[in-house]
Structure formats: structure tokens, C-alpha cells
Image (cartoon, rainbow, N blue to C red; front, side, top):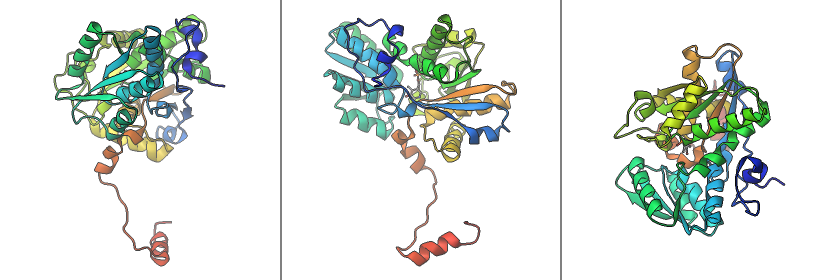
Length: 353
Ligand SMILES: *Cc1c(COP(=O)(O)O)cnc(C)c1O
């Protein structure tokens, strides 16, 4: 029986033999071939979507959290703490509940998608909302975890990266080598983790070559693109609204070593990509996740991808977490009487079917 990614990839972790993982059977997410999206590009490229929104709390953060919380228990920590744009707090709260640990989550006031906040509440986190952004919250968390026996479970915790690298393993287990990995970049832990995973698989000769790492940031939250910290980052993609990425150096290394690319995408193009994923493929990813597909569109239009390339887009989180973003914009529905004839007349109206 599948029992989570630590048991599955135990040889790639350094936990004690006797340690039982804190797991919600995270990982083993589907890699979905996007035939309808491929037709937009005249079948010039092959596209796969790694749908991480199907993890237990709806984002890839669960991969890192199973490892970080397992380690916190090994170390006899009493609580976990994180700064969060939403998904880390949801995941930390769930895994802390599973491990009988307390959790503290520090979030930027008013800037968290409602579904994510609801998760932190229901899993029983101590939620501390501050009048600052993610970067401010992370500075506080780093200090508290240094002074007290509370484990920081942000991606600066190396076990987060260890857990998250397994997504790279899974893709290679499914399709072996491929050419491009498109991935959102916020605090830059995940791109760091994927690169580590691909390199470990290459060292063990499980793949011949790693993909090029294609990282994408939101236009007004793009410190790695503009080359300096962004004081007041803004974007609809709240999960990557980060002005000072903690793992910037390892992210830039990954891009350089893989001959990859880093770029930024405007909010309207992020939302357009989100709609393409949902309306063409039936996959509802949150805005931060859709930036990986928006990145693919941009890279294709800039002729960065030769004919016949294979690309994987990482869809980091589930769209249900942020339904407000969809319902805020114009969406169409018809008000009709509760009446068979009226509904039938509407459906049969010229041009509808
Ligand atoms: C955390 C998160 C990201 C960004 O990942 P980093 O490791 O911070 O770069 C992207 N998308 C979603 C949905 C996330 O939750």
C-alpha cells in the first residue's frame, strides 16, 4: 500500500531507520498529458501537467511538510512555526495536527486566499496575522525558531527541500528524460528542490540528463528578474507575492547550471493561463500555479523551445483554495424561472446547441 513519499523514496532521505514518517499519503500526484493545450501550439511541443493541487492539503507544500514535521518529531520539538502566503500554513497546520504538535502560522493581514485561511483554522493552527508582508513575517519566524525549541517549517528548513525533491523523482519515474520544467518561483525553495531531485536521479543513472529549469515570477514581484529585492510586491498570485526570496542563490544556480531561464509574467496573462488550463483541460489550478503554463506560452512565443520539445508545467496548488479570484471577475450565468419550458427554450435557442 502506498504510504507517503518518505517510505516510497526512503533511500533518498537520512531519517533514522526506526523513525515512522508523519504522513498523509502525500505525493504520487498525476502527470497529465495536455492534448488540448498542445493543439494551441499546433502540436509543436508535448505538454504534461504535474498537478500538485491533488496533495492532501491541496498544494506541493505537503511534500516538504511530511519531511520537516517528521524531523521535528525526531528532534523532540514541541511546536512548528512558519511565515506563510497561505499554503505553507495550511500544510504545516495539518501535519502538526497529525503529529500532535502545536503550530503557529504568521500571515500577512488580508492577503491570504480564503480557502487557505479556512484550512489553517480548521486544522487548529494558532494564527497570527501581522500588518506586514511575507518577507517581514519570515524574518520574525527565523528569529523565534533560533531562540526557542520551535521548528521553523518554511523552505529554509532543509527537510522541506528534501521532501519536495520527490516531485522530480515522480516525473522521471513516469516519463524519464524531458526537456523543460516550467515552475513558479516565489520564495524559490521549490525550484531548488526540483533541481536537487533531478541531479540525484542523474547521479544514480536513473535519468541521462536533467531538464532546463524555467522559472517564472509575477511581474511586480520579480526580484530574481529585476536583480534586487522588491519592497512592496504585488500580484493576484498571492502564493508568489514575495519580494526577497530566501533561496534565491540556489534558484539562480539551478537556472544557470541547467541552461534554463527566468522571467516574469503580468497578472492578466497569469489569469488567462489559469482559464486555459481549466476550460481546455478541466484542471483548476490557483493563479500562482498557472504562471508555469503562462511561462510556457511566453517561452514558445519567444522561440525558446525547438520543435518536438517536451515540457512539464508544475501546477503547484489547487484552484479551489482561491475561488474568490474567479468569482470576483465577470462570470456569466442566466437567471431563469424554475420551469421546464423556460430552460428548454434557453438551451434550444439558436446557436446554443
Ligand atoms: C509556495 C507556493 C509557490 C512558490 O514556491 P516557492 O518554493 O516559494 O518558490 C508557488 N505556488 C504555490 C501554489 C505555492 O503554494
